[in-house]
Amino acid sequence: MAEQRLYNVAVVGVTGAVGEQIIRLLAERNFPVKELKLLASKRSAGKTVRFKDRDVVIEEATPESFKGVEIVFLSAGGDVSKELIPHAVKAGAVCIDNTSAYRMDPETPLVVPEVNPEKIFENKGVIANPNCSTIQMVATLKPLYDRYGISKVIVSTYQAVSGAGAKAIEETLRQSREVLAGNSANPDILPVGALPIKHQIAFNAIPQIDKFLDNGFTNEEMKMIRETKKIMGDESIEVTATCVRIPVVYGHSESVYVELKSDFEMEEVRKLLAEAPGLVLEDEPAEQKYPLATTAAGKIETFVGRVRRDLNNPRALNMWIVSDNLLKGAAWNAVQIGECLVQGK
Ligand code: NAP
Ligand code: 3JN
Image 1: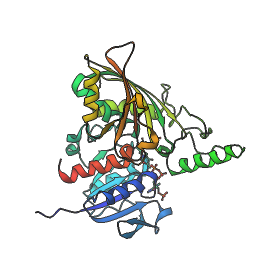
Image 2: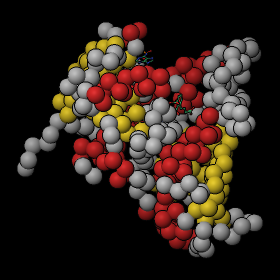
Image 3: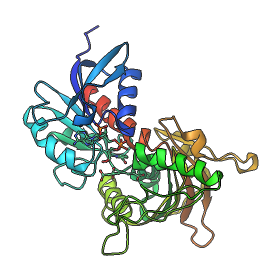
């Protein structure tokens, strides 16, 4: 058997909520790593991270970090990606970027391997990983789109605090303890947005993720709308979104209404969802079986349930879609793209 080619890999943002999961997946899935470079800010330089049976020292990410590197995974925010990616590409690397920096760039493929894997091979040095809320939705829409066509999607999200980073997780746990002890929550982190105004997340639901735009939608909502059209390769799909932060630590949930372009049988819809790659159909109302954030957390699949025909529109469906936002929503989708890249398929 031919020996497997190994790659020089770098991970930028390795100390973060997403970066930590990327490292874990590269090790667990035995990604063909020759040399591994772990990068973060100056603050983390010199600390170590365990990779398989060794400790790897974190270095400060700089434009010079990419000499000899072939594949780079980035999750250190859009500004860091915008600054470092041109240098990494110039050094010959392919960058798999978890941020929004390049997602809507017409030259950059925006990829969910279950939906548009062929786009990976059209890259010009950068492959963008979509927003977490978009990924789990399009992975579920894909088999329905291929069979019936889709005209409209209305989604409301219930997003976990880990989507806003390690500090938001700490904040939620701290506030929960404070409120249970009868103290004030003292909000400090959420919502992340343009204004310095913060709201309590413990025992609450905040209908704002990211800053507001002039059209009244938030940036997160506009990401879902624009990215869905780009990934599905169909600008005619009407998409509207309301994104809400809830005090769950891992796992984004979504209530999705979808209008199909042709008639359907519920049995066939269930079969399509059950057989689609990366999806698990969990839908037995009689047994109260449906996707939950607590059971999706830690898993790489997307879970779909509560699938039912709409009462007003016989060509429409309602569904409940749940996935681990740090895994399929970020780290796993990125590593999966990396696997497709090295396997050439
Ligand atoms: P996080 O927990 O706050 O971690 C941020 C990471 O970025 C840390 O490793 C941090 O290193 C590093 N970093 C910060 N400034 C840096 C700099 N100047 N140079 C190099 N590294 C720097 O955040 P996270 O939740 O992991 O998310 C990170 C980014 O991933 C987000 O900003 C977003 O763009 C993307 N993301 C994408 C999705 C998605 O939907 N696909 C979901 C979540 C996040 P230090 O520890 O040294 O500060
Ligand atoms: O809040 C969430 O649940 C997902 C957050 C994603 C996120 C957070 C900060 C910056 C992103 C993203 O991936 O869209 C970004 C960004 O890169 O714009």
